[in-house]
Length: 174
Image (cartoon, rainbow, N blue to C red; front, side, top):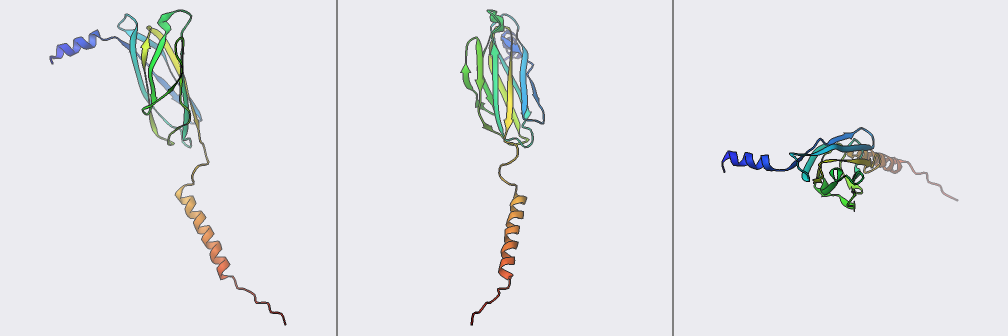
């Protein structure tokens, strides 16, 4: 295929510009948003695709994310229709569609410190935005680390050995 043909296809495609921002602190919450989903080049409607990565905070293993977009009045340029919202390839469930788009996941298992990918695709009227939350849980508890298991096994072993070596006192009745 000639290179000018590929350039023509790119110039004629209708894509939305995207600036997806993810904020995750060391605590159990985070947010993500794109406040400027616009059609470039115009006219609307057009499709958009946002993708970014984030790291699960330490000591947290479960994620319950949500995403929403609300149509502003009757202004169709602020409309977003999500085609797909995924974290690590797992699709969000649809809560509602139409003037209020809402999707969610419940209790997605992740590893602490794991790199995760958030991917959002959809169509927009040309001047829209969306936002979402990341709620982490599962801090503490869980399965003990191998060193903890070793200490428990050694402790039980020492107690068993001490009981076995203890001298028994013989009591006789005459």
